[in-house]
Amino acid sequence: MATLAFRMACPCLAAVGDAVGSVGCLIAAAAVFALLWTLIANMPHPSECRCIGDLYIKAGWHKHYPFNMVVEVHHGEQYPTKGSHFLLFRCGRNSERTTADPKCQWHQRLKFHVRQCDKKLKIFFMTAGTIKNTEVPSLELDIDDDLCEQNFPKQRAYQFKGKDNRNAGKAKLSFIKIEGEIPSEATPLMQQAMLRAQIDAGESDEPLNLDLEKMTETDKLRLCARCITGPLEKMAAFGSWRPVFVKAQEAKAAKWELAYWDSQESCRQGQEKLGSIPFIAVSKVVVDPSDRHSFFIQYHEKSGNQVVVRDWCLKRVDRDRDLWVDGLYEFIDTYRNVRDKLKEEKKEEKAQKKLQKKAKKKKKGSAAAAAASAADESAPGETEGPATEGLLD
Image (cartoon, rainbow, N blue to C red; front, side):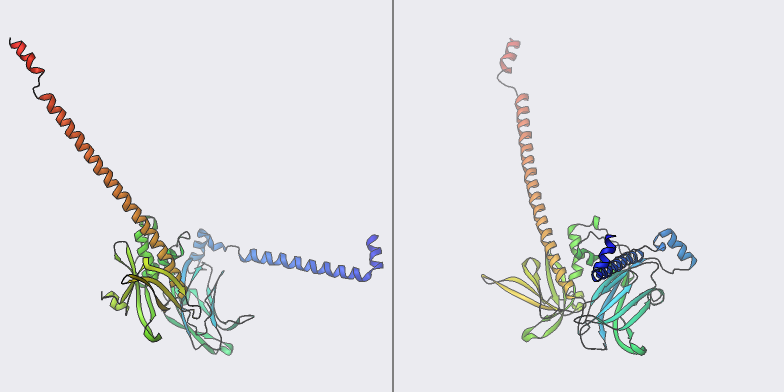
């Protein structure tokens, strides 16, 4: 009765209340629908159970087992519009993208887990906008026909199709199948090192045996050195750039340096390096804020009786700059920790040797004293003389 009286007295407010209630119901329904959609989308496929997946394979409904894959995105060509462009990849539940670059010089690695039920890899050529991103052309690859049966193509240029099926840009891509799992508890540098090792093994068709538990700290450091080895461009005099090959190497026992040659071939042939920086002398690794492809390595060097600050200005070639910078940071930190541990171990060894020497000296002294005591006991003394003489008398 009170509600009816209110509606009759204030019909406008009642109408507003009804509208608010309707909107609230719609919002609640939308929230429930979104939640259900999310749950359904994230539900595992039956084939993700190994025994059911085997049945799918035997029945011919699926052609491949689940695997991990790395897509190396090199660069783009004949891109259609002005602006910064990036590639967006969608495979099953996975969605990854490159950074936006106006010249399409991406040089990045993206990792995907391909489920047994995933059949397509969709790639979209996107243009970054201020408010929203614009999708230009797209490309669809069949995982079985275009990747698995083609032995995971390397350095292949793929043509994108725009409106009216017109050619609209190219992108050079490489696909690498990764065997096994990379431990999630490993550091980012170690994960990159293991990924690099698996990629190298996959390209050379050689078996890869990596057991982190059995590796020493020095062996892990040697493995991580792969991540900061490769081609770069180094700024020479008058601001010109020259191609160089940079390698992290162990110059002496437990003494690492970052050396460079004019080419990878010169490094492989064992030619004299053109220059190097001891990792212990590096003070900073700084990105260039004006160019996302460049970075600086600042280090200290002795010049006579003074210590001067110098730097290298480098530009990435075959991988993203952040991979170099993050790899250098973590490698230097890991190297210093290993170096400190080796110093502690040497101190302990010296202390143990000193204790062993003291123990040996003490043992020798005890042995000499025992021998002297035994000699004194066996030799004829003053007490034995009178007793003998008494017996003779």
